[in-house]
Image (cartoon, rainbow, N blue to C red):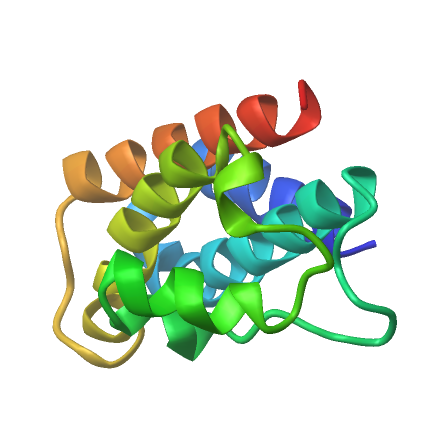
Length: 130
């Protein structure tokens, strides 16, 4: 469901004749939500996320080392065994680092938003292929 909502917002933004910037705030929230969903899905597919635990987007404001420490308490295997985790975390960090600026700040430019969408779609493919 979350994935469909994110895809719908991305599609709507890209097709909007008023431009992608008019969707900036919704995109900020959707991409952030989507990245946490993708990471949860990746960890669930690996069958390592402890039952009932959720990923919090605010964790991605921290360093990768701190994120791994937080995750290590919530998964059932050593974090080092998750071979794609570093790549996923790098992409998630890039998206999440822009979240508040896009959601609460002034209007951004189309290129920045398109880059974040592209990054999200790449992250989605990477997470799905695991």
